[in-house]
Image (cartoon, rainbow, N blue to C red; front, side, top):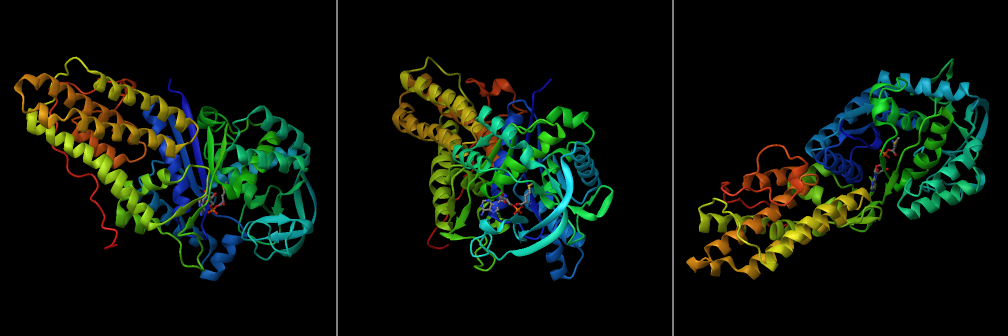
Length: 509
Ligand code: ME8
């Protein structure tokens, strides 16, 4: 039986349209999903939309539609963007779906039956954009300490979750599992937060309608974060604990932005502890994208629209750029000039050039038919070892979610391939008929190194990798043996590759 692997993205709010921030998390999850499939895992990759809550209700009112109409409209924009970005999700959950509502009610009920949800009264400051309550002392000038927007004082009857009860258990879990919260800086942040003390959490609202009613008291609506977080198990069929739930839970990794760390590493695990369910294996919070040095915001009109980027630069250039440019976990800045630079230097020059010059040479010197390699020299051996090392490195980097370093490892082989050609100078060998076998060995090494590189790249740039592998005459689905040197067979016909990436004239842009 294949080992299982479960990866999730946040479910995105439908009051906003998708931008590169959303695309970023989803792309990262897609790369993991594709890579794990390549490695023989049975993968479940979940994404979706977060459709309930006051924020969505307000946005719908403002747009003169019902919340569900708004959600129907916006979720399609997410789905069509994911199609365009070649996101290979297994399931798309919407919190307005019956399967989800049923699962949330049951989850709520189980925690309540355990005595960990009780009815009380709330009086605190609420930030609607963040859907978060704050105490007065936490506010800065009566504004939300997270987003700096005005808060409003709310007093209402509310159900509370006994989060305080799980403070020690959560801390013990974080300390016993160094990989649970990553990167490390985020883990430390959460440890300090939990050590300061956890308060019981309000998990219901009476001030709006758009959500899931509390079981047996429909005056109350389940708190939107309690509702949303539960998507990670309702999509697996919870409360049915057979089938997908038993196969994929606990999740291997929840990918999130740093903005929603606390919800995923304090709220969610304590809910799960109360419900007696295993905790996620890993929560990884990546950094935040700014645009040309500024925070992305509707009012600044600088929101980077991924559809436009894909239309202009192509899907794989965008996929490559977002994961290569910034180490996952750190903040990064988006700029068109940085993107164009990556396309021209990494994609057109290094990758595209290597494939086109090497396939052209094979066609010129061997009529496009791959010869049998002869005895390798030190140079050949060094290239082979680099390619073999890349397979191990990419695996361990992706295990750490170091996407950028994984790509760097692949590019080391691409650069080594280009250098290898310069050093072996096939054009000189070709002039001497006595060097025919040597020339064949060189052709074999330069192309085989690319085969393995493209195979690994297929997780990052599916279309480009397909084109590359197709040029190299590779057919059929890869299996575990595909990662081993020697996959290209002598006698294979290899066509002259078209340019993978045209250069972009930055000035004209
Ligand atoms: O928070 N840079 O949804 P959301 C990088 N519904 N990533 C960014 C980003 C930026 N500038 N802006 C957004 C929610 N993101 C909840 C989640 S989960 C149970 C519920 C990404 O639509 C990042 O992944 O506000 C962030 O965590 C997510 O979008 C927030 O999306």
